[in-house]
Amino acid sequence: MTRLLSLVFVLLLNLPTTLWAEDAPPIVGAIRWDGWYGDGNVTKAVESSLGQPKYHYRLPWFARVIGEDKVSINGDSQTVMAQEIAYAHQAGLNYWAFVDYLDEAPAMSIGLNRYRAAKDKQGIRYCLVEEGARLDKFGVQAWSKLVEHFRHPDYQTVLDGRPLLFLFAKTTQLGKAEWDELKRQTIAAGIKAPYLVLLGWNAEADRVSLGFDAISEYACSGKGYTIDPETYAQLTAHHVRQKLWEKWRHERTPCITFATAGWDTRPRQERPPPWCSWVTATPDPTPPAQQKPLIDAVTATPDELANHLREALAWTKANRDLNPANAILIYAWNEHDEGGWLQPTLGADGRPDEARIHALARVLRRTEPAPLKSTKLDSKSKP
Image 1 (cartoon, rainbow, N blue to C red):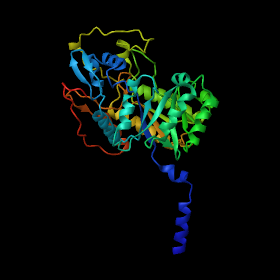
Image 2 (image 1 turned 90 degrees about the vertical axis):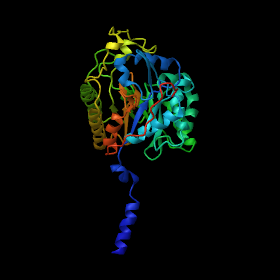
Image 3 (image 1 turned 30 degrees about the horizontal axis):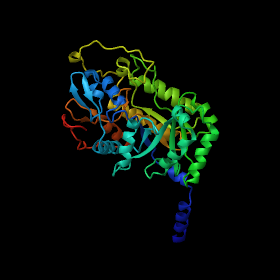
Image 4 (image 1 turned 135 degrees about the vertical axis):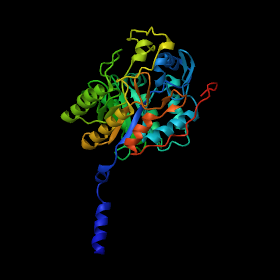
């Protein structure tokens, strides 16, 4: 009997690691678009978009209301980042996918730099979302910067060590040969080849032509930029489950499972930021003192968000052949003015509203987290 047990133990030890990983829970991450740090033009634009009282419920938790129609949103401090990390950990997230600006727009890299400087990341890892047009400008000179990120001990990997990299919209100047060069440089650095995921339009055909591993989405917009967005229930049922998940399943498309916290561009429709040049402003004439929070069926409830994430987890488990990386990407951690956010918001009492963090924790941690000892920022202090 002892010899038999020893033989069974040896056989189990030598099973392929993929078999051990079949029941592993998916790694779950959220996109970060960090226009909320510093005092540059991007932050000023989002302060304008969310300045109206009807949108104050969307403000990041570290924002301040400083006038009837005016807000301040500068989260540039290591203390703020430490608490963001704590929130992500409490929610049960595994990683953040930072939109990377390379050497352009330094203010848009404040969040990433603050994260990397954090002493305690509480297990929250990171990866990058590169933009095709920006990479086309930098060319293969960008590869060394990416490889340095891949070397970072907190960089998110999949499939036993492959660095996870997302590309939003295909490159047109950099083709398969150039992307193969990135793989070559990564392997030469002693790292496994990156796992390349394309986000964008006509993604499957472009994935094949560029030699990428999988596709996913950055955001699911339903009607696109509009003053009349679809409800969250319609968005998740029609545009995520049917047009993405079921299409991928039917066509056997390699993918990273996409999930969404919502889509509602009404703040940008009324007060367009400079980068939304195609949007014609449709200002709301309602005086600020008469505005009520614009919370309707477009805005996900915590329970709706939790149910959608449960479905994403179940779909991933049922389609591991399509998603061998066993990963989920959520739009978004902090796209507050575009309509998708998980990050706590500024509550009416001046303290963080953690309802969405609790909703995620019920699904990912299967627990109701105790409220964090969050910081109420003094109205006279700079975050």
